[in-house]
Image 1 (cartoon, one colour):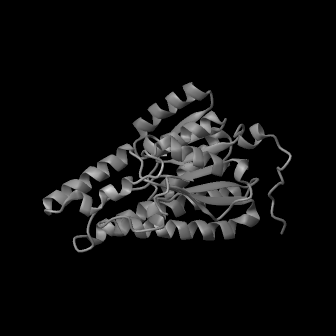
Image 2 (tube, rainbow, N blue to C red):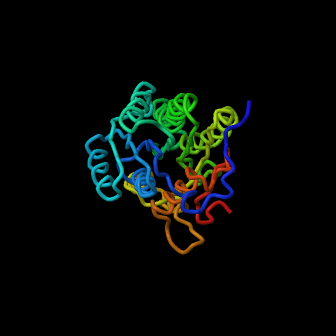
Image 3 (cartoon, helix red, strand yellow):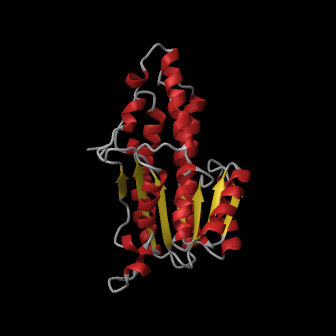
Length: 278
């Protein structure tokens, strides 16, 4: 079977970067990193579906992004841990946007709890969202891509997919290592369908979710009589570029990954880490 990836070596840079005419889904797209990604995709010309648990917030973000960039931006409720919910979001994207070319698995949870104190329910919930949710999204996208001209899947991993950054993150670290492995296997299986799969592994960026998780980690550490730096949360703010990353720093890497600039790449996870993992 021929692998349907074109040689775009003679295409101008503007064409390689453009997403005009492409349709994207971003899970967890209502705020934070997901919204930043959606904004850059829309700016590059893509029509976008923001799939999020918080529908009202997603609808507000969709209206603002559409007005700012002049593309269609829709909102849909989704629980990535529920495969039927993810399938519904994919179907809505196809109906509402006219097709599907890009899927960004961004939704995730970042709780901090020690191994000794962790409940089975806590452990399962992290994996249900971070790992199973990524699989559900990739599968839904791939099923559509298999009947079209292919597409691109980007999984938001984490530098925790390369290392164990702090105590209290066992479930998160394991889930993100697993997403890196899933990215490789998806790339292998889906390449004959014209589907590229890449991971993007951000360093800590101060989104609403990350700030809440960091504060929860500090509170838990203080309650246990442990200095919060020893508890590990400050480890996540080290940077060799002299500042913390921003959501848009990561969004620009995702834009590269979904565009034809990265057409030679599949199966890799790109570290957007400000040197954190050196």
